[in-house]
Amino acid sequence: MSTFQLGDLTVNRMGYGAMQLAGPHVFGPPKDREAALAVLRDTVANGINHIDTSDFYGPHVTNQLIREALHPYADDLTIVTKVGAFRDAEGGWLPAQSPQQLEAAVHDNLRNLGLDVLDVVNMRLMFDVMGPAEGDIEAHINALAGLQQRGLIRHIGLSNATAAQVRQARSIAPIVCVQNQYNLVHRHDDAMIDELAQDGIAYVPFFPLGGFSPLQSSQLAEVAAELDATPMQVALAWLLQRAPNILLIPGTSSVAHLRQNIAAATLVLPPAALRKLDSIKS
Image (cartoon, rainbow, N blue to C red; front, side, top):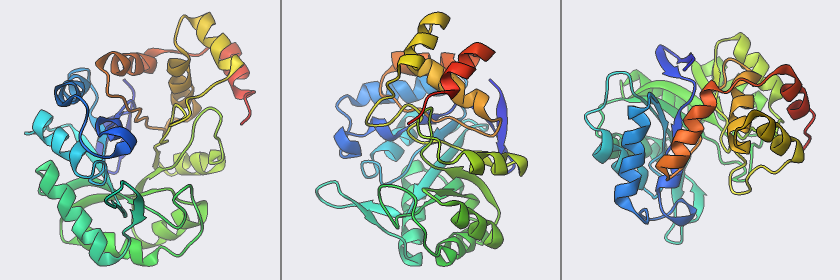
């Protein structure tokens, strides 16, 4: 697999997102705990060394599964987590953005993952739960920078951020990655991706396969048939060819689907296929 940097950490560009290991709606325990553990073990056995998680998945569920399956961790494994939200008793997603809440979330992640320091912590912004929205993030980044200075965080990233917020964060502390929604049909961050690539900063699309509404496109289906691949493999390959700083974290609770996703890292899209896929509009 090709690689990219998260600060001073080198990761394979095909990673894994652990969100789907929790129960329905990312809440509660998995339906099959042993299957979830098997997916995590198969992930690292197949060369993935970048796992994305958060202690508010479950809550606590995915981090505890990661620890059970993989601890003690391989030296080259990078675990990226998120802070900035919590779950209510019904599974709702609520902001938890004060300095005190962010510090508590960092300690929750450390405890449940069994770590002394977190590799990368993404600040999940919650001005609008549904997508990026403008708002001052100086206090958020200062809080994480303080935890970084205390040795609890190695690197800082952003999630659900606007271009202005990325610029503001970078004026306060080094930012190693931005995690926003982006995929074949959702391309609002095109300019941001290119700007970050010039500065060697990773862009990590969440919902790379469409999320709760899987990608549907006749052009995508046609290209997949031509290349003897699945549409989702083509969608992942397109992202990898879109820009060198894109890191993928597709999630699954199935070993079979995991291996299909990993195979997309070696799928090369010829120019004609790229032209057809680039013509897709949301």
